[in-house]
Image (tube, rainbow over all chains, first blue to last red):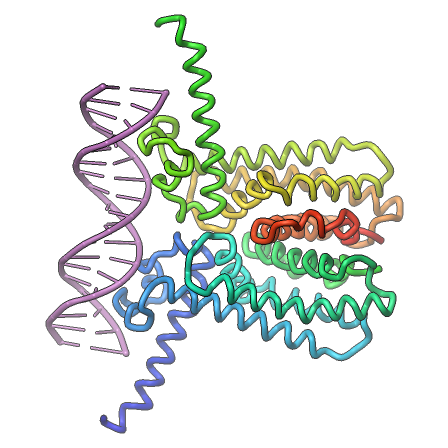
Length: 200
Length: 200
DNA sequence: GTCTATACACTGATAGAC
DNA sequence: GTCTATCAGTGTATAGAC
């Protein structure tokens, strides 16, 4: 109970957790849940093997945590998109602009990758799938109103808003995958290209 | 050298290979390269563990083979798209129609999944990445002329044809992923929705 | 809080019987 | 051609020293 070390300890704890998080995102994004090993993770973070288990009680827990971080990041991005003010079409263009900036570059494309790995690889981790579906629903709750508003204003193409939203999100997801394999997509893909999917 | 059994043996061999192929596609699509185990594969095919190694000398070889099958399938689909006759816009609509039929349903969506697993998971299998890139190139060689032709006819939106092709393929890829998790997409997503990405 | 060493289960691959 | 049994290597998780 020495009052001196307490704050420092929390600081150390925070920094180490951050290291694990950063390393885990890269490792899981590259190798998937099964391909990523705790040994690799230890090497990537520069920390010792046993220390990982001091912070997380299992590999599944590390993965769940990283997925959660990725989902929160996506959530935050879409919240900002939903709060943007402007004409219906400006909202669409802003969304595409943000997506290019936030989804196809460095860190953020890894977040998409992580979630993709979680979705495409069968893994029976407790509430993981549910939380992904839940967050996805929140994303649709933001993008669908933008589409409907655009349709009512006559600037967004006719058709089922849900279908359009799914196609749009799928395109972003697919492009994020492409971006990891092939760098420099964010200069080639313009907001106009993405928005054209919704354009009337 | 008994002449009687030869034909039958080949028939057996073919059927067993087919069983492995079918099972492997499902298993690798579900769990990825690392998550799929030879034991699981044996269980999924209903064959014994050792028999798999009679047909393939390693797990990597099974995976390579399955990826190759998936790529051939994609290749064949796009060849047919390239040979379609009609007006520039009819060609676009036909492409979207074929994609919905061939990519979002049962077997074929698994092919997309396999290739995705191969691309998104770091795996140092000899010439795998190269063969995927090669086949992808072939796909672009078919879709880009359709886009350019449409632009010259004034029915496809302006913009870099390569960027449009990447966005279109990425959308298909993303939707194929979506289709596996969420069945019944092929009734919601219409050819008009896909084609709108390219529409002027 | 951080590390090394180790227990235990599982995986890929092989050997050898039928 | 098909199967079971087995080996060597690796993976997760834990124990215990500092």
